[in-house]
Amino acid sequence: MLTFASNLEPAHRAHPGAIDYPPPPTPHPFRLRKVLGLLRDIDDDPEKTDVALTVFDAVGGEGGERTFQRFIRSSEGRRLYRRGDELVDHMADREALAAMPEGSLGRAYLDFAMRNGFTADSLVGMNRDLERETSADDPVRQWFWDRYTAMHDLWHVVTGCDTTPDGECLLLAFTQGQSPQRGYRVLLTLIVLRANINLRFQWSLVRSWLRGRQAGSLVNADWEALLPLPLEHVRRRFGVPVLS
Image 1: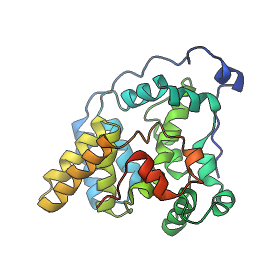
Image 2: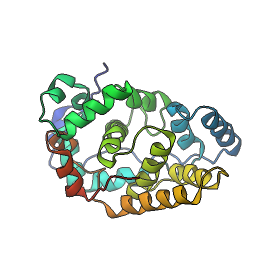
Image 3: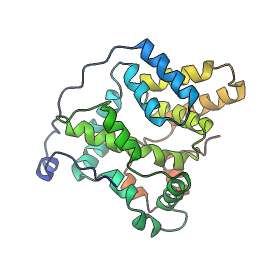
Image 4: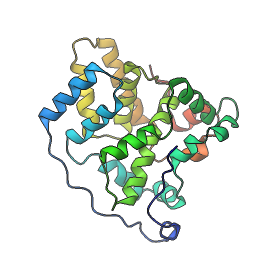
């Protein structure tokens, strides 16, 4: 298991002033040929998560910078950053998760991870390998994107979306509602335009997007504190229905 730690010392996190971080990365150009090649790879194997992550770099633009800025400028985001927890480490502690109450988010996540053969750090490791959003000189963004990537599987649990292609598409639409990004829009547009997607499923995608917009911010959520709580309580707290 990997342990993810920030490059900033705790004293820097505890400073009462503004959080210092570099200017945003230079936006990438849209690389159409690479996008089309990656999409063919996804069509051949929808389970290739690393290819899906690479699409976000290939579509260019500012990536998720607006999502990061909304988080780090919010009181919740600054508090979570200064507290310094690494969410992936909490998600990887299966002994602690197993000791949580039956019906809790933590137990539901543990069941989800074991059922699918997932490890908490797999997506985070992929994202770091791709170096999609950050560099070694940008530990604040690195901490945030590690956290944001780790949330993905928790969002699966809270929304009730499974890991089938349809379930991933529904969660993608919900995520676009929560955290609008060009990469999500490109993937969703291509999904909707595919000839084998029926109108009923297209409407399910629209409904999932709307529910993402209407729900409370899962990006800013204190997941470490939510893990021991009943899953249904978490859903009600953020206004997240089970998606279908």
